[in-house]
Image (cartoon, rainbow, N blue to C red; front, side):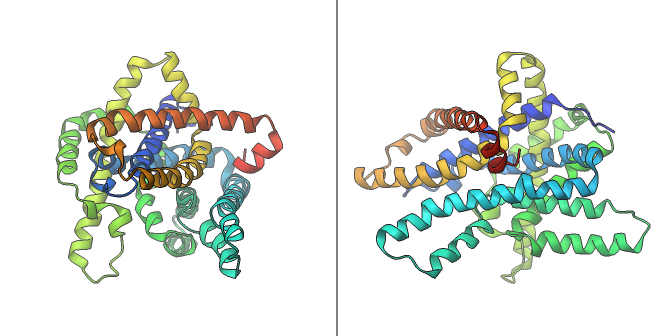
Length: 352
């Protein structure tokens, strides 16, 4: 079993953290009149970045579960994840709902209810899905020869789909989380994926070319509630296949990049972001980019009457939004470092 810290995994998490910012900069700088779902860079990023993030989370979770055991892991979920969700949801609720309602004189019971909608909704959905996947895997790891195992496995699937918020997103990311977990458990190495590169990379590129807007999990979901079983099944299959192909392709490509850059200052910085800043940046950008920048820039576009950032899509995708993402990376790391100076506040806000 592989229980040692893997700096390549930290490097990958650092790269993926940047991609989260980049994707959100494309999305929330589009304002009105630009369909970011059809943006090429956005399509590439979203075809693999959350699946790979979950795969890496599952890989690391195997180490955590092996070292700490089930009871400690379950207890740590409260301080490491649930308390930060509650606190940051409160912060987001105050700035986005409570204060505007007070200023407009429209404070009512619905405003209070908004907090529970935010805390258990799409805000910080990735953390909710992470918790759901961890609980599902813990249940799956019970003794396989017992009746309890079979019952708890079923309950685990139900928990992922129903008990935790955002059931469709939980169901979407669970196979990737489990893939990373069992990849580590059975001692596979990323280098073993090289032999598949000749197949996965070309097929991944082909599937990217034919990737449509309705294939996004955010657009079509993952269940068959609309009654169109055949179409939904095709979309779900397409989404999972391109996700796994994308994960394998990116793992192979970035491993070669990492071998070249390993021990360089750039690689060390990316590893540091991946190991110590990724969760903090994800939380901070949900407020800084997804809410604040989105609101501010939308008003700017309304005043100007045009979104000048998207006039040249090549510049928008390859220059403007990557630079914005790098700026965001710097700012959110700086904010994290400032909060670290007060260990009590930092520990409560980020579960550290």
